[in-house]
Length: 157
Image 1: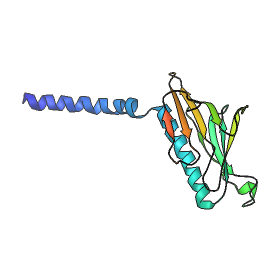
Image 2 (image 1 turned 90 degrees about the horizontal axis):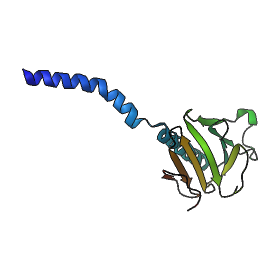
Image 3 (image 1 turned 45 degrees about the horizontal axis):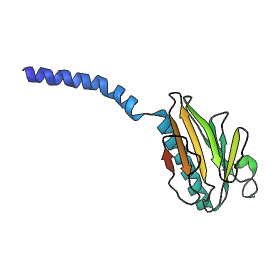
Image 4 (image 1 turned 45 degrees about the vertical axis):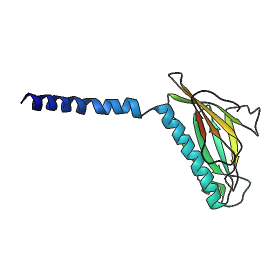
């Protein structure tokens, strides 16, 4: 009888504690934002290869978002028909800096990267931070589909 009561109490405590524990351990806004950026860039590179069309990827540091669109120099569809798909980052995660090899001294709040029709892009470092002072750097290589992720700010290898 005592064992049944102990098991019942343990089950009740786990039922209450697991959702809270899951939210604190598994839902990390900084890591989630990094995964979403990686997914967006990967999706865009695949889209460029599949449609054989170059794209522009814009990082807006002021508005804390990124979006992509067809390269305007390509006359595939009218400008008003273009899909501008993007990603807005959570409030506690900030886009700190975007460094692209072709734009060594890029200034301003918006950095634009060109994705070729073969899915190639410049070597790019995307630096993120959160309200807790944690940092992430995403390194996108020109030809590799999988980026490297660092737990600190990295500018050059």
